[in-house]
Image (tube, one colour):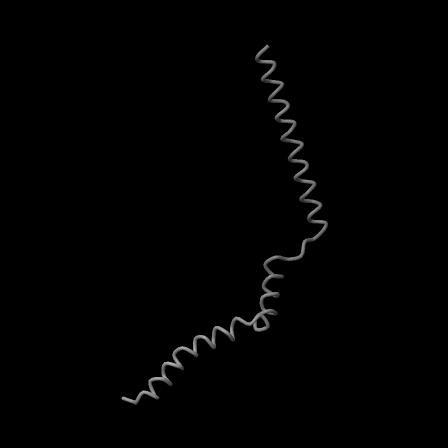
Length: 81
C-alpha cells in the first residue's frame, strides 16, 4: 500500500479521467461534420416536385372525402323525408 500522496493521485485520476473524456467528446467541433452527414442522410432535402405531388394528392383526397360526406348527408335527408 502507498502513502497518502499515492491515494490522492489515484483519486485525482479516478475523477479527472471521466471528466476529461466527457469534456473532450462533448465538444461540438468533434462531431459536427459527422452529425451533419447523418442529418442529411436521415432528413434529405425536400424535392419541390415531390412536395407538389403530395399536396395535390392531399387536396384530391380532401375533395373526395367532402363529396362522400355530402352524398351521405343527402342520403340521410332523403331517407328522413
